[in-house]
Image 1 (spheres, helix red, strand yellow):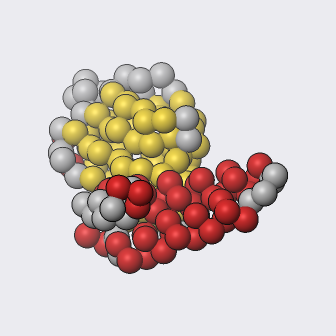
Image 2 (cartoon, rainbow, N blue to C red):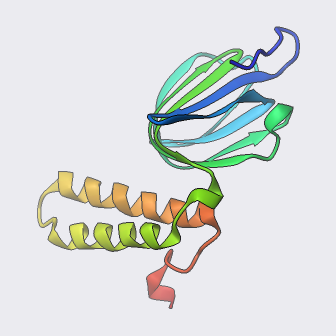
Length: 150
């Protein structure tokens, strides 16, 4: 794991998916999507364990300055000197398939239409739609984000 010195002001950051280690580096700040909204953590932050949402992890400063990753679902552990992101899905923007992301939007819309009075189905439809939207945004493809505007 990347070693951050105790007085360096840098976080050791690790991003892991079930099939690979995407990042093991240092950063001054990490922005990431939680289920409750975006968080930013800095060196010395209070410990936190949060559920990941779908969106972008953005890294600032350190050895990984400017890097961006798409993540969806999982957990993040924040400690004063370390951030560990365990994501069900983690991709670099160039690894995202926009056609696959648009299929998620279609699937989310179909589930939304079929949900009826089932709140769990609405939550699932929203999660799938959010993942598709965030993937497209990370890939720089805004063509499917707001179909009503086309």
